[in-house]
Length: 80
Length: 172
Image (tube, rainbow over all chains, first blue to last red; front, top):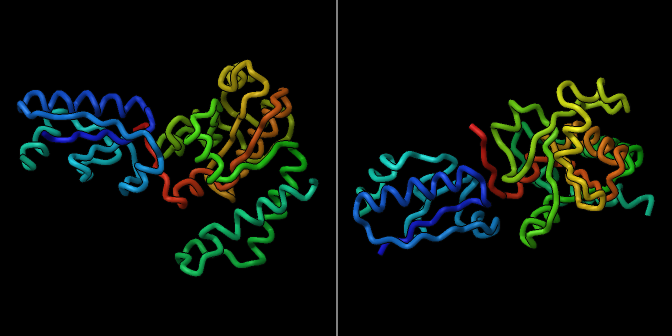
């Protein structure tokens, strides 16, 4: 199971990124668990300077943008 | 307590990157320049009758999920490029005159009050680009003038927040 982590303190773009990441995972048939990280300290610890960000199993793959579900699908496919 | 703003600014400066040995070339402030900034902000704080808040304390407010309003007084073009998540935008000019039409290019007092809310005791935090930016002074002075009781200026602004290593977002 993949851990999809959305990092952000609640901005609209975080919600959009969540939506896109979930769509991408579902379309690829990936078994995933969604985690929302809103704590500024934790976001900082993970090395993110720009939110929203997406991490897969604790590794940051996107930062500062809400990529489309198609772009996230490509990232997920490369990790699989 | 009259010296409190002075001491707080001194603390902020001593603990900031401005004072660190590993300053990048284009961010170096000499001690006399730091002193000028301390004195200016001290005087502005006395004039505006608001309080100062550090980046660390603002972070604590977020951590504690406190109910507060954060306003960025920069022009929208700057604000949209980098903001503290949750900050609202209302542009003020860098010199406080006490005349709304001089201090604010666009936007009305009711619009500003609507951003601040009805609770006069809620914490209102004003910030802008950095220690050299005086827009947060004008904004904080207006919040006090309009009757808000818990008004704080985060003088190091978005730059101080980033220098502390905290994340920002964009509206682009």
